[in-house]
Structures are given as C-alpha cells and as structure tokens.
Length: 103
Image 1: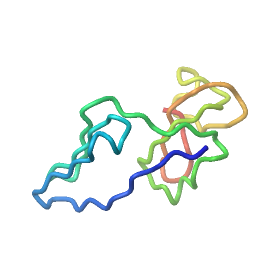
Image 2 (image 1 turned 135 degrees about the vertical axis):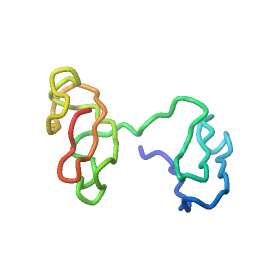
Image 3 (image 1 turned 120 degrees about the vertical axis):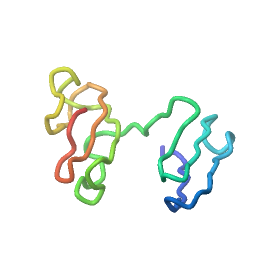
Image 4 (image 1 turned 90 degrees about the vertical axis):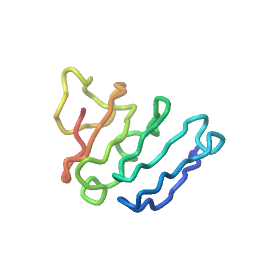
C-alpha cells in the first residue's frame, strides 16, 4: 500500500516561512526557514521500504536518506557498509551518491 506524499518546491533564501498544516502530515508540522532548511515540530518518520524498493542512489544524490525493513546487517555491525536486502533488520540508510549505505 503506498502512502500519500506531499511534494512542494520550496525556494531557498526567500525570507519566507512555509508551513504544512497538521492535518496534511499525520500530525507533523514542518516549516522552511529563509536558510532553506526544514524543521519539524515533532519526530519525523521516513517511509518504510525494502532494499529492492529503494530508488537509484545516483539519481537520489548524496545525502538522501531512507529506512529499510529487510537489511541483512544490523546498524551496529553494518554501519557504513552497502546495504543488502533479504534480512530482517530495520535500519536507516543514506545515499553516498553511488550506493545506499547503512547509517
């Protein structure tokens, strides 16, 4: 089941603040400040996916983050390693611009 997503282009350094209404984001309020950084008023939650469902790490770009539910290594043992699917570990991952890595 796919989850609804809210996509908006937020221009950086405009001096404006952008708010997402609470009802739009399952109770999470997000705002963008003039620096272009996003701030959440509550803990945020990344979509859960399997390793096979991750988008291309090159297209996603270095610094992209995701959360997978089927990594073969736990975060303590696999931190910084390329993630492989088929396991039962739930771990955050990041793109280094070439691969998805645990961390």
